[in-house]
Structures are given as structure tokens and as C-alpha cells.
Length: 244
Image (cartoon, rainbow, N blue to C red; front, side, top):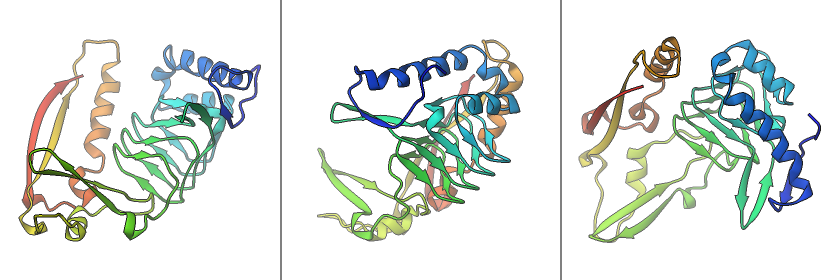
């Protein structure tokens, strides 16, 4: 590469940001031309290494949604699931911030998880499907575990926070939540969950075998009930079928 990408914080339109533009432009050209056809194989690992990514032994990368590969380090036996996003940059208060991402030995990133810049995933950590990691906090203090927002119509929204070394447990969380007018009984709570059943079809621009592989990996991914420790007898599931 003609420019060496380094961590920086500054304006989008500055000389410092030029290497960042060139680095990602080349990455995206390869991504949207042929990288999809060689993922996951040793060839996609070779490409990322050529772009400056540090990849350990036995690592598996099943995604092309990677930006700033020169600032990403993946240690031994790391598994990057399908459609995972790893982005070593983000915007804050009008500035572009480009920082390193490090994923320690034996970590697993589930389907469609997102990891942003300036984050370190701990050794053996498991990032659940669809999770978004913006801070490298291993454990969230109990005083900052949850936040309640009052919505119109007598509704409440509870936002929970967990570190990357913690395992979410929604029933236990509900025992701690305090609402102004209600007392929650986790045993009487009904959980409404959505479910999408993917059906591969031969038409389209993606090879049929890749669609079948994607569906198989999604079926084998850790489910929502197990990840959030939700009792299955208290779940009402709403599903739909979608062709890909």
C-alpha cells in the first residue's frame, strides 16, 4: 500500500485521513468484486494479511464486512462468524477516530455481531449474535447495569448493559429492576421474540451452496433463549419465512 495506516483522531478532510481513505477504498474494491467468493477459505485470510491484519494460527474469518484491516489483530483460535462487522473507526463529536481492534485468543464473535474501534475482546470471550461492542469493558458495575426510560402510554423501556466477559441473564435482571408503579415478577413475564426462517433459492447473484452454508451456520448459531437465559415456557414467538 502507498500509505501506512496509523491510529489517529482528527477531521475527515485532512492530510492525516488520506491513508485511511486509500486503505479502505482498496479493501472495499476487493470486497465488492471477488472477496465474497473466497470467504471463508485460506485465500481471504491471505488477503487480510496482505492488507496488514495480524492473524493467528487456527483463526477462522467468515465475513467480508471488515474495515481498516491494518489496525485489526486476531490471535490464535479466534472464530469470526458470518456477517460480523469489524470496524476500527467511528465518529465522535465531529471527529473521525481510527483506533486499533484486538481480539484475544480463543474468542468467538457470533452471527452479525459488531465490534468498533478502540476495543479489545478478552481471551475466550463469546460475543453473542447481533451484539454491538463499542467499549472494551469486561464487567459492568452493578450500579450501571440497567437504565429505565418512561414512554408515553404508561410504558417503560429498560436498557441493560453487560461487559464482554459477562453472560446476560434477563430473568435475574428483571428481579433487580425497579419501576415507579409496578412490581415485576420474572415468573409471570411473557417474552415476545421474533424468528426468521431462511429459505435458500437458486436464483440471485450468490452461489446456491453459499446460501445453504449460510442457512446451516445460522441454524447452528446460539439461540436467543439460551444466550439471554430466557425460560422457553414463557416465550411467545412470532416468525416468518424469508427467501434468500
